Image (cartoon, rainbow, N blue to C red; front, side):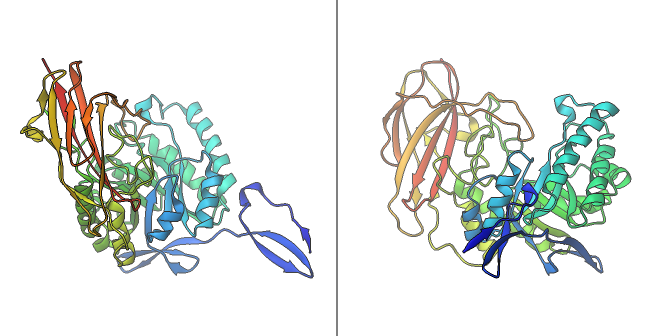
Length: 432
C-alpha cells in the first residue's frame, strides 16, 4: 500500500489515519472545543459538547498510570517540551492544562516596566500560537502563583493582556491563572483588571476544605479550579525547636488527602470544575517525599489508592502498605530529637499490608535540606550519608549518629513488592 503523508503544522503531529483509494493519508486531529456552561448558580465544564469534570494530577511522567487509575487530565507548568507532553497525554486519552510561565516579582521582575512586560507578552504569544490547536489541550494556565509575595498589581494587567490574546486567536480553550491560596486582595484585582480570565485556579493544601467560602467572600462569582492540592506542605506543618518541619507519613497523607478531596472538591461540583493532585511523580520540596506521589524508583504511595477510589468509585486491586510514625529510642519527635555525635541509637516503625504482601524495609539518613526556595522553585536533594546504618534490614534500625553537629533526617521505606510503598521520616539534631 502506498503511503502519502500530507504536510501539516508541526505542533499537530498527533493525527488520524484515513484510507482513501489505497492511499494512507495522515490527517491532523482537530482542536477540541472547551467551554463553561452556566445553569442557575452552577457551572459545568464541557469538552466536545460533553460534561467534563477534571480528575487530574500535575506532573511530567507516568501518564499511562494516571489513566489507569482513573485520571483524565494532567497539568504542566510551562511549555518546555510541551509537544512531547501533549502528545503523550493525547496517546493516553488525557487532556492538558498547559502553563504559560510568567516572570515573578519575587524573582525581581517589575510589572511596571512596560518594555519588559511587552517582551514577555511577545514571547508567550508565540507559545500560544504553537500549541493552541493541539487536540489534548484543555485550558491555558496564564501564570502560576504570580501573586505570591507580589505587591505590584500591574501583574494582572499583563495577565489580562495575554488572556485577551488567547481569546482572540483561540476560540476553543479557556483561560485560568493559578493563585497561592485564596489571596482576597489579588482576587479583587483580577476581577477589576483581568476580565479575560475565565476560571480562577487555587493551589491549596491543608486549607482545601475552606477555599470555597474564601473565594465567595472575595467576591469571585465564576467557576474555580483546584490547580494543586495534596498532603500538608512544609509551610503549614508543625516545626521542631530548630525550625524544620514534621512530615506526615504516607498513610497520614492518604487519610488527609481523602478527607480534603471529599470536603474540598467532591461536594463543590456546582462551582469547582475539577482539580489537579500534586505531585504526579517525585519532586524535592524540602524532602523528596513530602508532596511526591511516587519515589524516584517508581513505587507509588497510598495517596494514589485514595485518588483511584475517588475518581472511579472502585478500590485498587492492590493497595499500598500502611505505616506508623518513626520513633528514635524514647524521644518524642514533636518535641525535637537531639542526639549525641557518633553514638549508637535505635529507630523503629511498624508497617502492615492490606493485601498481606510481604514487606521489605529500607532506611536512609540524609542531611536536612537547607533550601529556602518557595513556590515550587527547583530544589536540590540533600546527600545520603553512608556508613551510619549498622543494621537496617527490618522494621527496627540500629544506627550511628553523624559526627558533625547539625540537622539531619532519617527516612524509612516499606515496600510490598507490587510497586507500592509506605514512607515515613523523622528529623533529628546532633548536638554535643
